[in-house]
Length: 178
Ligand SMILES: [Zn+2]
Image (cartoon, rainbow, N blue to C red):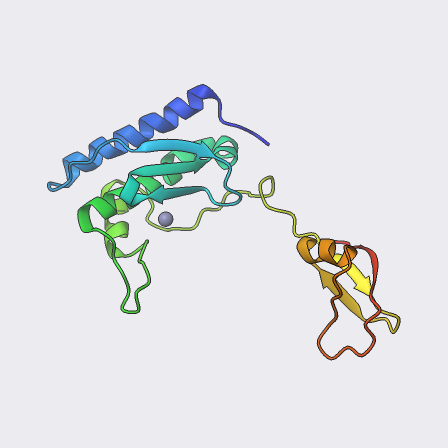
């Protein structure tokens, strides 16, 4: 897995600081402090903002593998979440779900000159968790696929079967070929 170099981390830090300065100039009511920036491993998630703690976390591997796009896009995206929170607080739908990418978020992104769409298109193959499936069959040929967790338990003696099975003598056959 690739990792950011120290100088790349510095660059991401600089973009963060610049974005905050830009926002402080753009939005009259904003007096934002520079957030804490952390680099961690977070699976297929590119970044995450913790607005009430003024923290942004970035995916070390995805940042290293998509450095230029990441700087332009993900860094600004996560900082925009902090800005949105500082300007508007938490926003919720009528049934209480937190709105993360609502109108105010998109407006901030546009003001910052960034793409307001929310999906990243980075290749996540190097960070995706494997979804191995384990094939178990019974003596009448029914196939049952177990995930890693249940497979382990099955090997340790927990018995699993499919709904409606009358023959429950499942045996482990091997890892599914995908
Ligand atoms: Zn977001």
